Image (cartoon, rainbow over all chains, first blue to last red; front, side, top):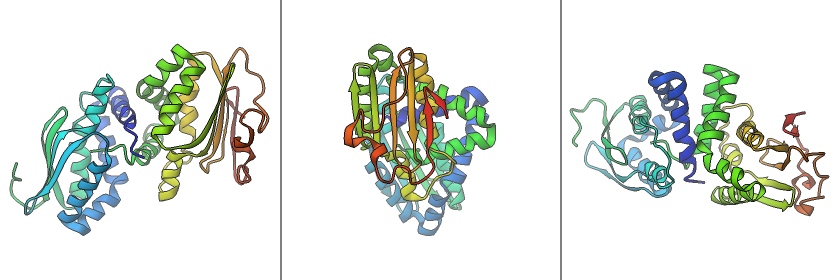
Amino acid sequence: MAAPDFYFAINATFRFFYERWGEEGLTRYWEALGREYFAPLSRHFREGGLAAVEEYWRDFFAAEPGGEVTVRRDGEQVTLEVRVCPAIRHLRAHGREVMPLYCRHCDVVSGTIAREAGLRFGREGGDGACRQWFAPAGEGEARR
Amino acid sequence: MIGCQDFCGHYDWTFAYLQREYGEEALRDYWEQAIARDSQAHARALIAAKGFQGMAEYWGHTLAEEEAGYVATAGANYYRVDMHRCPSLGFLLERGQQQFADYCEHCIGWIGPLMADYGFAIDHAHNHRGQCWWEFRRASEAGAPSAPGEVAGPKDVRLRQDWESGPIDRYLRSRRE
């Protein structure tokens, strides 16, 4: 049930937290979401390693409607090349104002999921196209 | 990234988080402000402009997109939905994933304020097992809800053998009984 109109609610939820409790409150919400709701995913990544990370994100983006994303594993890093972010594409296609901190949720939520799994997460770009990566926490600077 | 494929899971978790961290009033405010006024602005626009026809267009699109098992019935002075298989609650029940005590409450939480804004009253009941019914009428014309089968015929969810096999929450003229 990957209904793209749910992106409207995700965007509105971020805006609600931001308007009520500021960036700090929104970040606390994202951290708790990563730590609590996604705890099973962190366990899965911890147990399955980068192969599990690669498989999860490949399946994830295959199910999200409207995105153009390539997932690849190069040695000790899984990279997500997001050419078209499905959420931002859908929001813009329907004239919705994208909440200004929208892209930050990937940093905080995925960053928390990664940390809880003994990994680290990075992102560059945004606003509809970005590159994200997961790598073991102890490794040196991730390749971009 | 937070996706739409498991939206119902993190939506439900968010209800529990809001209630736990900020209280019941914040959760009600979230449904009214974030969902009814922001997220569901497309529903608001349709219902404001077209009334019952707008409801039919909104739920026709949304429930098809969510692959719901439902029947809609429309008349000159009402719009009715019989939900036999709620995809949203079904997602949670299938996974044993409910974090919030009453997930079904979110629907009246956003639909209630939206309908009130445009002068519609709601009769509604849900059984916490993926079935519910809704009747919308102009508040000025609203009386008692239809009798089981009167409007939707044999597809009235209240005629299911399992409809009353557990607790049911009821709303009459937008007020909880």
